[in-house]
Structure formats: structure tokens, C-alpha cells
Amino acid sequence: MNCDNRLPDQLFKIFKIEDHAKEEFLRKNSALYNSKYDKEKISMQVQMLSETAGNFSLIGTVIIGSFMVIKGIPGTSIGMIIFFAQMMNYMIQPITLVVKITNSYKAKESLIEKAAAILEKGQNNDKDEKSQFPSDFHKGILLKDMSFSYNGSSCVLSDINFTFEPGKKYAIVGASGSGKTTLLNILMGSYSDYKGHICVDDVELKNISHDSLYEYSTEVQQDVFLFNDSIINNIVLYRDFPEDKVQKAIIGAGLCSLIKEKGKDFSVGENGKNLSGGEKQRISIARSLLCDVKVMFLDEITSHLDVKTADHVLNTILNLDDITRIVITHQLNHEILNKFDEILVLKNGKIIESGTYESLMMRKEYFYSLVMVES
Image (cartoon, rainbow, N blue to C red; front, side):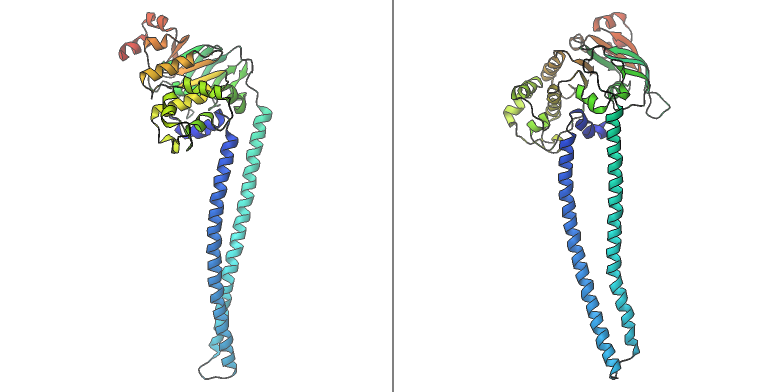
């Protein structure tokens, strides 16, 4: 399931950089508003000066014409009075325009205040009513009779029953459209309208606040969003980390050669246009390695990497201690899948098999068929 439209928003929440994003947005929005304001101000001044000059011209014409009518100067008539009515029209127009602009501003101000009040209320409700992610996390993530549908009719996932135990490594495999990415997105809290139960140490997932969820879990996706900034700022995401921790993440993500070649301050361009797909993916992985989380979700993280780098990155992630790793992969290589504690096989939105690589191959069922087709 394509989730491109959610990437920036989800990135801000997962890595908890909403404050920086808001600050940057407000700064650029303020600059844009000031520019538009100056433009409108100058335009209004020119318009008002033009209309005022026109009105004074009419007034002068009416005064002179009236004087000529009173004196009985030949060629003048009462028709000159018509100019008074026309003069009033020209005076009323700019006044009406000013009133219109003022009312429009007041209306927008009221709407902005209402929207801000609604957002603040929503944030307060989330903080007041939602539970916290269990800090000890010792029972794992339990899915019981869980089903999900995007449109309310056809289910993308059906009757999912499984337990992800703390600290273990899980691979999710299956054909395209089997529901792998949807399952990952639900576990990350992107959708709360699922049926059944998803419990994190006996706490229902939909009842856990997003702030708490993103504090203890992180996700690496196929599509990576990058800021128009330096490599290092896209790794640390404007947060402060010890230098040795940052260097460890850079090494773990296989970014040493890139940084050696281009430097930490190299600008990646808008959404990473100056980097390759593999380089962007490695930056995303480095971000996650910096986080002290309990659960790590990874969606085809090695899809844009060469074989050597992919093997290095995967080994780094699988060798992490005290982290539950849930990985979606299309690679059915036995050297890779043997590194996982358990493999979940999805078909048509259901878990039809689960077990180690060797046990699944010995059954010679759907997973065995997938491996044989790929090989």
C-alpha cells in the first residue's frame, strides 16, 4: 500500500521533530506573508492615490462648473450638477473596498482562532486520555482476531493472530498485495479503526498516544523523505546526540564512503535529489539507529542497496540488542532469512504459515513455493 502522502508527517512524529518543523514552517510562512502583505500594501496605496487624484479632479471640475453656472457664463448649464452624483460614486468605491477588506480580515481571524482552539483541544485530549507505551515492554505485541479494511467492505487483513516477543527478529514475507505494509502501518499506529485487538503489554494499541508510541518505536520505509539540508542534519534531524553515537550510526548504516567523498555538510537537495536511492535509504537507516527504541519496523530497507551494503546494513540491525525487529522483505535468500527468529508468511491478508526458515521449507507448502519460484 502506497503511503507516500504520509511520509513527511509521519517522519516528524516518529523522530519527534514537530517543534523544529513548526518553527521552520512559521518562519517561511511569516516571510511569505510579509512579502504578500508588502505587495498588497503597495498595490492598495497606488490604487488609493489614483482614485483620490481622480476624485480631486472631479471636485475641481464641479466647483469650477458650478461657479460658471452661478455667474451665468455662456456655455454652462445645470447639467453640471450631475458631476456631483458621479463624484459621490467615485468616493464611495474606495471606502467600500476598505470596509470589505477589513471584514474579510476579521472573518479569517475568527476562523484561525477557531481552528487553533480545535487543534489545541485535540492535542490536550490525546495527552489526557491516551495511555503510555509500556516502558519495560516485557510481554510483547499481541494481535488477536485483528482485521482491517480501508473501505469498510473488503478486508485487507483478516483474522490475524500472532505475538511478537520482545527482543526477537521477525521477517514478514508474501506476494505483492498480501497486506505486509498495511500490517506494519497498523502496528505503527497509522490506523486505529481495526477490528479485534492489538495489545502492547496488555495495553490496547489504539489507546496509546502517538507521542509515546513514537518514543519507543521507529520505522524505516522504502520511500525516504529528506530535507533540503546537509547530510548530517538529515541524519540527526536537528537534535543533539553524542558524536560517538552519531559516528556509530553512520558506520552501521554504511554511510562512511558517502561522507568521506562529499562531506557531512553536503546539501542533499530538495527531497534528496542530489543523492541516489541507496544513499537516501542509508540516511533513513542511520536515523533509526540513533533512536533508543524498543521496537523497530523496517519495510524493504535493502531494496535500493547493493548486495554488499544490504548485507552490512541488515547484519547491523539484526545484531542490535534488546530491540524487537519486524522486517518486511521480498528477498527469500536462505542466508538472510536464517538470521530471523521467526518468519510470517502472508497470503490474501492472512497469516497462513509461521516458523523458522528450515521448518517452513520442510513443510513444503506456500512458503516453499515462493522460495522455489524465486530461485
